[in-house]
Image 1 (cartoon, rainbow, N blue to C red):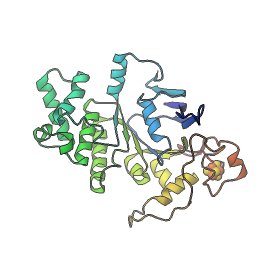
Image 2 (cartoon, rainbow, N blue to C red):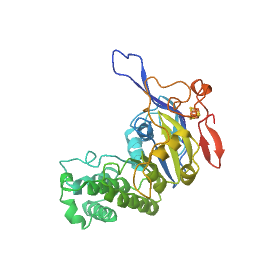
Image 3 (tube, protein in one colour):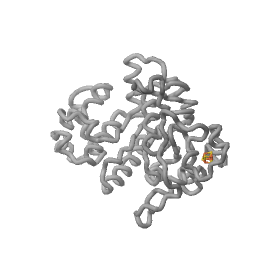
Image 4 (tube, protein in one colour):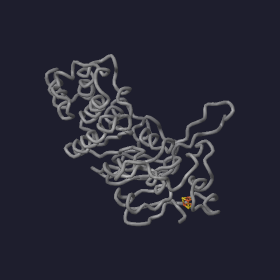
Length: 316
Ligand code: SF4
């Protein structure tokens, strides 16, 4: 559960001394057990920072992040930290960068079982590695265990990362754009594989993406972020078919049409995500919003309930 979370990074430049990057502001949501929650937004929207705060790569500046009743911002002993990282695993965007290039796939896959003491001896570790590689379609496992990461394709490397994340039987997986560096032919099979592993392992999932169609396919609920704030949150189908916030409509109108695969003409043209060092006053989307009124630049709109389990941050 995140409640009123802010993450501000100090700007490391003399000219802008004393300024901060407002990467996350007033972020509140809860993840339900066993659900897939997608966080959608352009780069600079704060979605990766949100994942990094939950995984304790960063500590929040303000607000609380609670995992099963425990506030995460405090200090943890090494044992507690290890336990937390067994329960909360990450899958990163770059399948190559996440794997040690000097180790074979076999050695890479052994580590989580050894670190978290999941298997008792070498034979048990080897059996676990074999069954995990088989689960992600890297068969026969003996053939893949001998290889180095550079000898695998991008899709195979991401399968190793996914296998490693699921290997330790976590409760939560944070997947940060896991398919964005893969070609189209691999994307669908990796998404389907993650969904079937999620079902068989009973794990909860936070799926971070810039692709609204992918979010709809993968998730039960969708959060739409813009310039460090949540703009809309609701059931995935509702967000797609009955989106309310002008920014969600922009994302939808800019997505390729499913029938043709061609990009549609965006509903709102012009403008980029604003600087997070000096974010716009009021609604952060107001400089690009075709419906903006005077009040939009004066106050940050609160999140309002607009339907069943559906909330949006807009004065409309
Ligand atoms: Fe547009 Fe105003 Fe709504 Fe922001 S609050 S999305 S500027 S109408």
